[in-house]
Length: 172
Image (cartoon, rainbow, N blue to C red; front, side, top):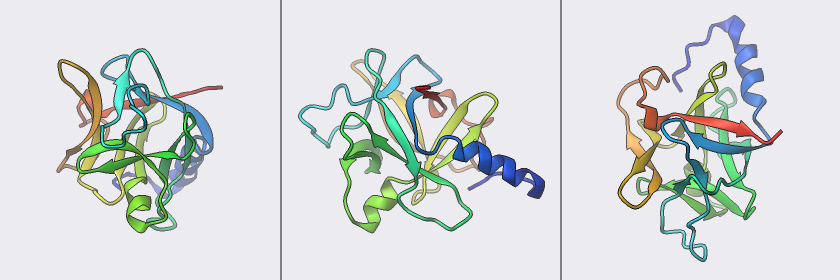
């Protein structure tokens, strides 16, 4: 994780990150007015990537990461509230919804580092087991989806393209 945090700022960082744990939220793309959605998930066909929708926004519970990197790294996992057995997971370059499994790979694929600018409510998400990748929205003629993209630089929000930035919209 590439945070530049001074020792005195670490408590502020921890406080602001933990603020989102166990909170019900929507995840919105910065580049467009679209939200992460279960809207187009047909009969729980888990082969399709997660869509971004302007019509529907799916509610998530931000949980402490299912996989523990170390005791100092703060990670998150996203549990769907529409179908509470589903987590956001990356697989073969796509972000998908998947039923929770009791495997190391599932826990790693469903755990993300959360890079953020608290004041501007900007976030980027990085898989713990693919450190050179980030979430991005991808738009084609028919839909908008959520994918992983390779990113070779240190992840800082100022360097990321708009399609890699998200906002967290709390329900309270």
